[in-house]
Length: 218
Image (cartoon, rainbow, N blue to C red; front, side, top):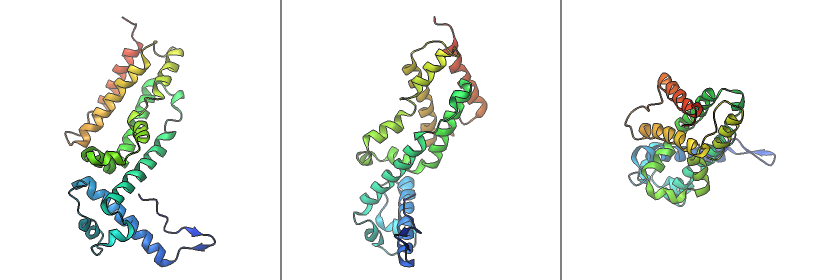
């Protein structure tokens, strides 16, 4: 959601009714554009359809977003990425107290919730190649990297505690990331509901993966 505060305080004075209405209209335009871009694609969404979705006159969008469709798309991408990064900054508290299988399940649940909450912007990025230049490459690397930066260290600590054997922690991380991305990609493309959506199937897969990390080295 666009970070527009409709009841903010300026100094010691609250926003006027007119200012609140303007902020609400801008937020509505933002949300309408995000939904239409996700459903129909950026190119296939004319400015008129965004105005019509909230019942406003043609041309209203340019009052709030002078740069038109491109500016509102930039706002959609920037705001959603800001929120995703905030959600993923410290999302895995308490993992050290869990058995490794339960820790991986918790990691999956965090990513599942983020995917669900930000599916619109993920769809936009997936289907619109031309919007990728609007994305901060460092932000994208953090999100796409998932646990790539901290999960190898997580595995190393588990090996030190004797829960798993010493393994190639980076490669093990990449394998797990590949499984997660494959799951979310099948949902995003509409192929199926995602093979990890079934709790029992997911439990078996996690147990199998962990068993490979525990097995004696060949």
